[in-house]
Image (tube, rainbow, N blue to C red; front, side, top):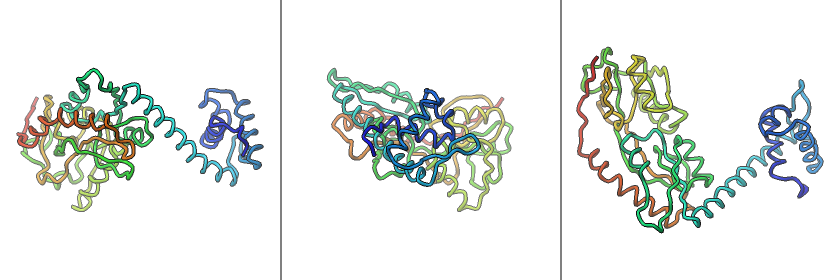
Length: 315
């Protein structure tokens, strides 16, 4: 292939393939349709085969085009990862650590994370970004962030984790619900009950654990909503939409019309931790992990020794 084909040219090919139209690809790339057409023609000339054919006014990949796009997707991904990692090296040299954290974290942990900073003048500056766990994983994998703080488990061999907190899974129950007066909730109590569940998009691995747990017990979950945050789930429960699943860290919220109850067997827990790439560990990242571990030590001790009391908030 000609050396004149650029990363941008390859992104044009991918955009047309994904959008099915040169005009829609142009909109996505903030350019013009004639410009995209010229780029596609130049790439096809360089490759020596037709990559697209016209179909009902749009553009479709030929078989050769499908094979080409399949390979360049990996190349673009590797290129963007290389860019992020190079930028991170430069950031480290400039005294910056890019850290992403989950907006799902319990309020106490969010408070600690948002106030996290090194004390010594020559230590790195922490630049914190709030994301969901899936975005954190991708960002750490691609090198956009040097570390992340999110929910576990994480099943990527390139990543390693260090657990920070282990929280019980709690049920947030509306005051008018039949289960409101119970001190704890058995899994069988949730059979076919309208349930505001844990978001599959935000926490896919933990969502799988929940499904597997109740499936083994033969319990049919009636999930009516999967809000993106626990704060939204609690709000929906307070509006009498159903029972909400949340981590125990959110059960300290005081709100009229709801109660927080643990699952009776306490086998389901939500673990949060630090996420880093195995091949990107540096002294600065180790210092960051140690700082976070020290700042969360008191919170871990409180969680270990405290048994949450039932909380009634009736209207």
